[in-house]
Image 1 (spheres, rainbow, N blue to C red):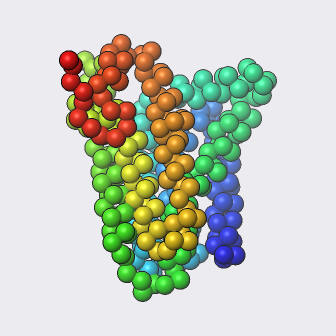
Image 2 (image 1 turned 45 degrees about the horizontal axis):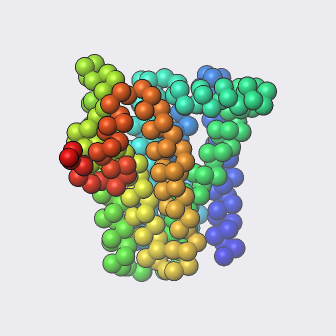
Length: 272
């Protein structure tokens, strides 16, 4: 146990170091929005750091590193390009403006505490299945992936594909000027209001299943990761916060909510 704690400690310290460098950059450009892209890329860094320390000879570890990297790089590039095209995210403007007004903090201090230092432990927690799973797999490099692991691999790949397709459909929809102010309700968005969030969640439950295939101890030690991510995307800063704004900016969104599943893909309700 001490070995895994040492590995996790090194990972967390390195993550904080990178987070502080990014905060300095954010202060210089006065924009924190790129942190969304680092949310995904940071998990790739944590998985790579775990593999560097524990080794990557075991099949479970290879799959965990590969799936985390595939998911993280795809999403990080997508979010970074979106930020470069769209500019500062109004959500962060509102958050930082409110903190500065209520607490009298400077922009730099508000960004450090409310965005960067808050993101680091949450990112670290979500990535526990990959970190602990890679470490545990090194103890038995000859161990083959079992049925639970293959189910997890299939789930993770499905989640990555689902999210990728959903993001591509949304990007194409937004590029068309005729769709300004309208609600996307075709493609995957016909079956769920948040195919990207559903894809994220399915991916990390899949990664957890691969880690859980190593043993019950790994499963229990890392299950907080996908549980926390699911809560975040469905109840906290994901779906709930996004839909609050969409109800105000999209006239047809209330009707879309009435007929379309909020998370799990499901055929839309038909009008009576």
